[in-house]
Length: 476
Ligand SMILES: [Zn+2]
Image (cartoon, rainbow, N blue to C red; front, side, top):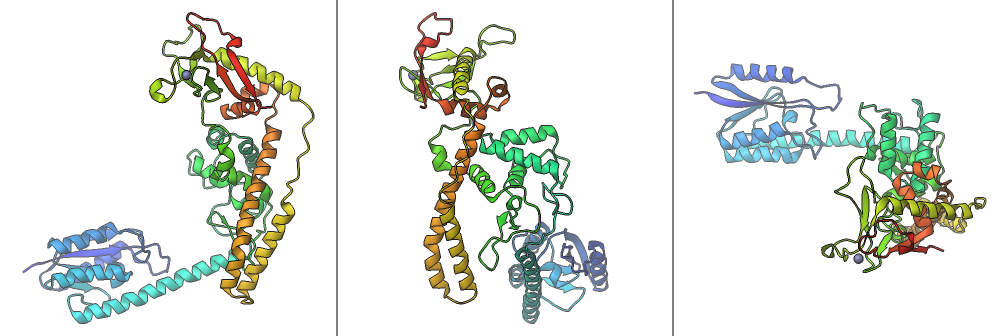
């Protein structure tokens, strides 16, 4: 009688120096099967590079082995070692379930006498897996503790050199640091992240990881919001808080100030959504979309390409229109886009020229002293709690209002910073500089001066652009 077995082998990236190649595992269990009368390895189930210890890792061949055992495709399992098969108790229990279900199944490993088809064998297996599991968890804790010690000391972790620094991870790379500074200023002045991403892609900028692929929006966001830029030691992208309750500072040269970093994060994370809600959405491709309003019904007008427009033909390639009734407008008012844009750019030009007074001195944020005070108190509380000078319950009760105040002040400060940066960045020398700005920046400049433009119907046959049919509502 032939017993058809499934052979299971796995290699993991545990780096414990005892790594066994899959080939070696397979040769050994086939040898063992060969000396048992009637045993035959019908199929090999090989999982590669997967740790059986990590909880969230799915091992496809292990899953398949369970199914094949349950359905009778194979009549037993042979593996090099029990810990190749199961290092998590719950994986072992799933295997045991199958063996309890089908008592005729056979089980064998090369290295020990565990037999899952007997009750004693199952008990033994549970003990062995429990111990192996504890050993792995201890290793994990040791690694985590070492990382935390490095972080507490503000020392560099491993991995690729971060963007902005040289390979020593301490000295600034002037070219990369300049790119970061420019991108920060652009973001704070209203340029969208996707616009900057496209610019970096065009310049062929790569991270030190150098995957050979153009930089992505997500990667760029990570670079521009890295706490490390302001000198903070970061763990998983977040500021690392030391035992004294304060952020740990690293031992490298910072690229920007903490205030600027916070403002950039606020812009990118949408923390300023309260602030932004008062502005118009800036996600538009045309200069005046949403700024123009229909005089008939008040609805914001949107831009469309003109279907009749062809390369070389006369007239504007796009038009602003009041949306159709089905989209909330009346559909009665429209205007050729290009002459209207040009007219408004001229108006803005004049307004900027009048405004061209010397740039205002940056205004200090008035809450700075209180914020420092609050942060100091929070640090002292956490320190007292860690030193067991006060109970955790008392500390938490005192911390809550302080943390609320800190967050509120932080939000106020970010808003102040963004406001200051916008004020200094939104003044441009028109029209040369204006044309080179990305569309969202152009719109910011327009919105600095103009709240809305009400568009009167032009009447039938009115072909020429007539500025008298516009009511411009200025901001001040
Ligand atoms: Zn309308």
